[in-house]
Image (cartoon, rainbow, N blue to C red; front, side, top):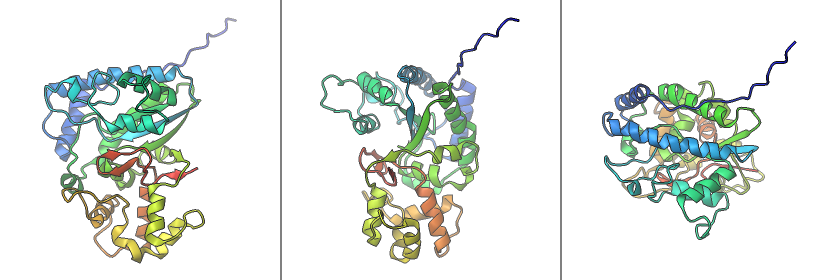
Length: 327
């Protein structure tokens, strides 16, 4: 009897077809998330950048990693039509050289030195990050509106997009990186402020297949985080020795208008903390009534699911995490 040949596990990872991409974009247009109607150059840009994404993943796979840290972004950076490569900053495209903290922040976080003459190009930084097991995955495959005034008013059919694009593509990417199922994955958010809050707190996506697996495997940090420092300063307790959830509930009258721990910025942004609280309550499907202890706990649970690498609406930062977890 002939022995069966052992098959090598191989996963495929393909880009969206033009029809799929256009359909997804038009749905985003209906939801009020994008700047205008679909145009061909958007899809061509997506395909070019997809090639560089696959090149990066193939490079990462050669390092025989045991752990990969997934950074979840919201969308590729906005660019104007006919823009040159030096005016764009897509993460994986080494030819798009416009400065982006989304590249330098993970680089510094994983021990890279910006002044290192041996790692002084975007290509070399990407090679460095691949060896460290860093993968950035965007929730949207095209640029979306970042205006806070728009985003807080229009949440749209977020569950449709997360289910029909993000979770499917996320699963395909994980299978491509890890066909033998030997790699451990952890997650953090580098989405912009409102994008991070929507991913963590939009109640419409909590029960989707695959979502819980992402939020239960979070990147761990070895230092106190901005969230812990914020709670310490706000209610005067030491996070080392205190049940923070219980203490937050017991003392919510002290800070109920200031619950969402995002730093204040210019008057053109959402500077009133209560506006952020309203946004999160909207995502959690709460009515505009007096906050009670049950709601405070639910808000606490949603905003602490994953660490957020942000110190403001549009600024990623390598050492100031809003709500990470200590090792």
